[in-house]
Length: 474
Image (cartoon, rainbow, N blue to C red; front, top):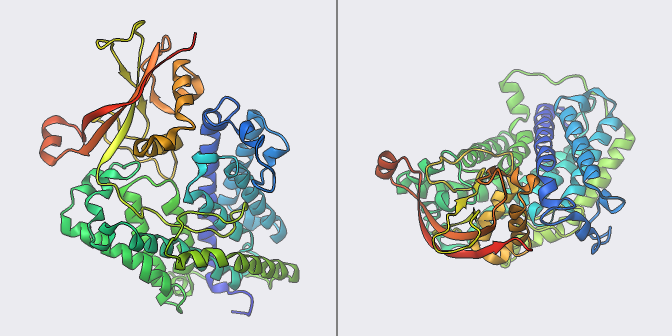
């Protein structure tokens, strides 16, 4: 180990960079598949409309120079191809400067997408991917040992992710303090997975143990990241285990997976390499220009860490916030409050020429969010269904959907092919509906007895109209 680098962490760096590149690939593929109906020129929240009212310094993005749906697709596909090449190890087979350039281009392309993504990209896993991706630029490649300073910056990022999430819970909903939040969370989380029903029906003492383990993982283990090995490695490994538990219990996009890859450089440190009997490849001393860039990046991150660090100490802690448009150092947190009941917005259409109490309404099926009570929830994460996720927020309050739900219903009246590709099925394949509406339902998990007798995973009860019938203009 030298003053600048430590070859004992080569395996952790390898796992981190390959894993992060794979997550970048998923994120770009999500953009390719979903941008046109959500953000395109005829999208629910069109990018050109955003660009007309923002300046480059407010939201740095290549799309200020030019926007078209075709250009967006080219940017997203370029990011996907570069991410795939990095996941395959191309960054380790090219000269150090070229490898850094590949990581920097991928980061800049995804930043360009996030900064025009509006509410569809307004979640912590977006800024977390960007912040981790920025640090990956300065980790070097197989030709040099990992820089110690950047390894510590990765620990600082992992600390803020976990510790911020722990503090937001401690300061937030009372059910976290009395260890009862998991009585409800598996049922009311944004998009349950195939095992969420079973997690919900665990005995309540186990739910309390889950909540207590959450505090250990998010308030104790992060502090231990700054202790010597093997204690720090064990703390990181414990975080990996708890994140895998979250992966199994729900769909949280790539939030858990980025946290896992952040923990790998610590967990797969010198002790792990000795345990598994792997030896570091030959690595040359870092060139002076690389050391200078790492020192400059470290100074920048340290300077920008002031406001996120102050936020951790604040009684009015912000959750998932950025303080500058490059999203280099951010705040994180999740589920400071937990809902006790679940509501779902169900969108329906009809082909009846005259709307009356006897009209026949057909339900639109979404890919991930609960709808058909007999359909078992699916596993999608790390892939992210952006519309399904926002529908959960719409059920919390109409204000969350005011900017895009009216446009969604207009597109359904037109049988818009791009929007319909976001859904699992179209009940009107031959002709568009004459009217659409949205209704609010109360959903709850069925009991074991109800599941066996009816085959239904959910029980739902109508609450009332959410959006009254909307008809095509003209």
